[in-house]
Amino acid sequence: MGKQYSRRELIAIALSRGWSVSEKRGKGSHALAIKEGERPFPIPQKISPGVHDMIKKRLGIKD
Image 1 (cartoon, one colour):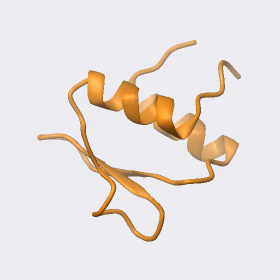
Image 2 (spheres, one colour):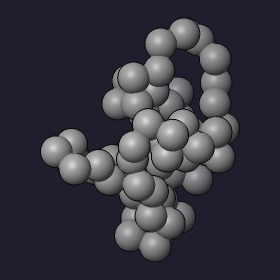
Image 3 (cartoon, one colour):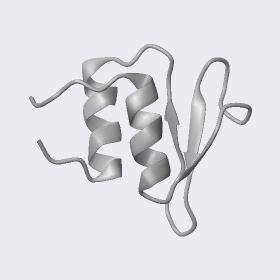
Image 4 (cartoon, helix red, strand yellow):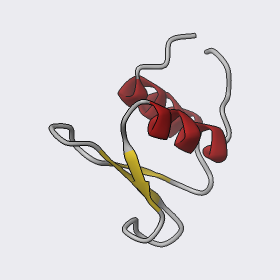
């Protein structure tokens, strides 16, 4: 299963890997991660295990 990252840690990793994260563009309490040539994805306030794995995969986190 790997390490569980907090929302703040996932946003920091996204920023370090070239994604821009907008707190205002997401729906409700979601932040939106955007990168040129990539499909944007939301980072919700409360992250379920399945969504957590999807975000890790999109960010290329292997652990």
